[in-house]
Image 1 (cartoon, one colour):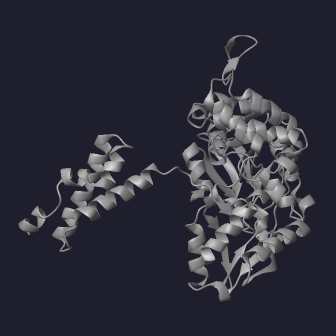
Image 2 (cartoon, helix red, strand yellow):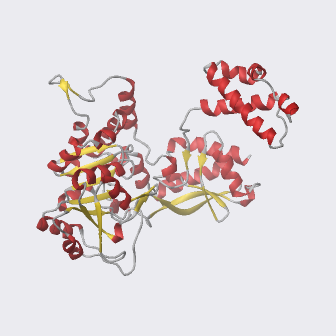
Image 3 (cartoon, one colour):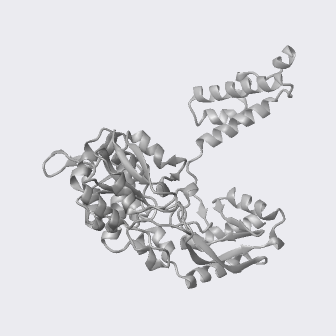
Length: 455
């Protein structure tokens, strides 16, 4: 065994290999040396397990591959042809051109992020975004943090730490990524009081559970699941009445936070922040990167005294949004203020796309791809837990078995590893590509990618 270890190439020999020498031109020497030593240590362990001694070419190749992966730009831009508009794995909402410019400008220079230019003294990073949110929702005040789970955690910690929060058993749910409402409550320091049953809860259940130690009523919108059949759920206005009569604030986790009426686009109605505020909700929480169509952010709108309590809480600094996020969010909100969200915010362009437009693009794709490609009717989904069960009719490019030497999984893999990568979905042995989630200016790239993958 000792003699086999002696056959391992030396660090210097690997460093002298042309593939590794090229890495030394790109990276700090110590980084490359450490990578070589780590790879050789892995090789020693493999040899001790009875594997063959790797050659210098094999070790150098492994180090070079690692260097290539580490040095590649990330994240990789790709084409989303899945038909899932808010695809969590693909980064959810793409930003508008104005939002991208705003983020880039904030990143590349100095700004008045926390400066009052008129007074020449320190300002607040939240004021500009808060002013737009107040106008759009009718709320007295607003605050933006890094994500919606953080917003709700902050709200509960500031309003209910050490006290009780009443939640329906039918809403004590998991909100994504393994985060559960009861766990968020525990981390905030509040105590969960569940009322009603999984399928039926009434306003009087909340009223009867209120005690002198009750800090708030929390309503969690079922944005990522449905309860159907023998069900009952009080309206938000009924709970607002209970909250006012009993002197406790009503908190509302909206989840997606649509500022436009989804019902106008042949979808189910998604509760809006402006509806929550008009109903009498004290604090409403929603995401920036779902149906708002902006960057990842958690938004709080509501009563001024409560929002200010959140702004002063120590957690606010830990959860604060960075300058690029706030700049992109500000630009996104301006689209709504100007009445141009449907034209300028990408997800709303996708939602509003007509069947005629989608059919025309799908047929153009099929004509260019050629034999084995056909057009079929299908369905697009919103994704990211928004409006579960709701779909939008669409037209698809469908590539069938006559062109799939390696099966649908093989073609999907080839597309995924192409340049640019293309993400698709597979149904009934066919590869499906949905134009709804592909910007028209990416059509030529998508068609070429499909043709290359099929070749």
